[in-house]
Length: 304
Image (cartoon, rainbow, N blue to C red; front, top):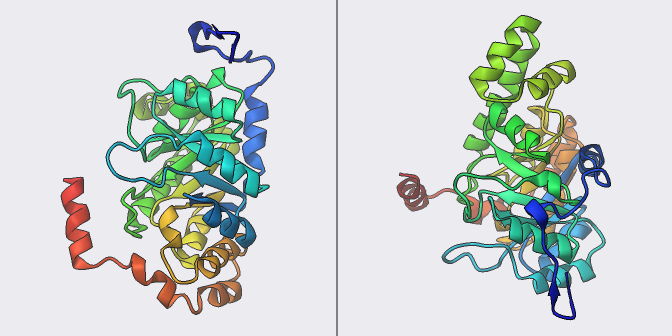
């Protein structure tokens, strides 16, 4: 970016030519993740475990969770890139296009403009069409998902609980909400689609495309509270293309066994015999993720 003291200027934040990196190419790069599990890691050791367990992609997160959470140190990203061969995804704060510029320069495979960390711009999202790197964005409804796609998101993360509590209820609620709205849309007459677009505050052309395809026009993963093989299989049977596992998944005596079991459940979500096998012997592994009354009260107080 800088040579002999010269600084590259980003005219209108357009750091790449859209013609050399069309949206269809970015969407194609996210298609390779379908049917897999993305695992959140905070160090090289966890990254190796996740890769060995069969993760399709890693999210590199800041190991320090105190105060305002930002993108991780680029040196940590580079360290993990050296020890694994699978794609790397990294979170940037919502609206923080400079963090996205840095992450693209580091050479990450995907950028997650994530509300799971601090929000940098409360009114504006990153114009994702200006980047070569595919973006992932979170949503809790169909209208929100299609709005993020219009901004250039090549993958949607249907987000549930952000507290790391192991409670999958909000994720199930949001996935059902999105899939339910798509079913309603599929049964509409063409004339009704215009009004429906206004109701959900989404671009008409993307709503029409969703109706034609019978699903979101991009890959959709579920995230939040997914800590057991049964949770992962539930998300897949509800219509998701894959799941995202938070870093709390490593808080157990045998993280490889738990991560491997969940990934196998994603791959064989319709096979109850495989689900029985992958769910067996995980009681100790799941102990740290059970919701005690104190934790429930703590998370309820934070949400208030």
